[in-house]
Length: 159
Image 1 (cartoon, one colour):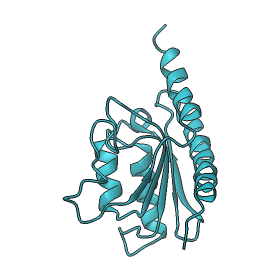
Image 2 (cartoon, one colour; image 1 turned 180 degrees about the vertical axis):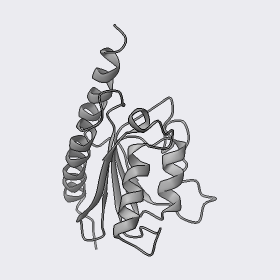
Image 3 (cartoon, helix red, strand yellow; image 1 turned 90 degrees about the vertical axis):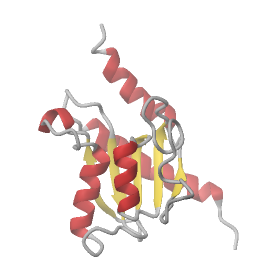
């Protein structure tokens, strides 16, 4: 059975547009990154934007917040097998670790993050062959649009 790569990419773009909406909902002080967790049937389980500054919590990244909510709604308490996480920026080491530990099946991300990215840029936490669980990863989905949100955010702070 062959995989329709065009359909896979269209599906990923649809997911990323929802993650972009989540990113746009971030507090003005937080970097606008959004994450959405989808169930195996494609239904939205949870979405979140970064809240590190708003909550004063170093772990309040969009991915972690969305994973926490998704595990309340789906799975056996913490496993998200069969689920997909769509996030606007390549996950950092903490978020990649949380995604792997949650047993997420697929990760779709937008902009590459060469300084802190842990899904192919700086490290590749999720696809390390020494790990038991390695999700499918699709990076660079709507990358320019995702990167623009972050670039614009920092441009207004560095004037």
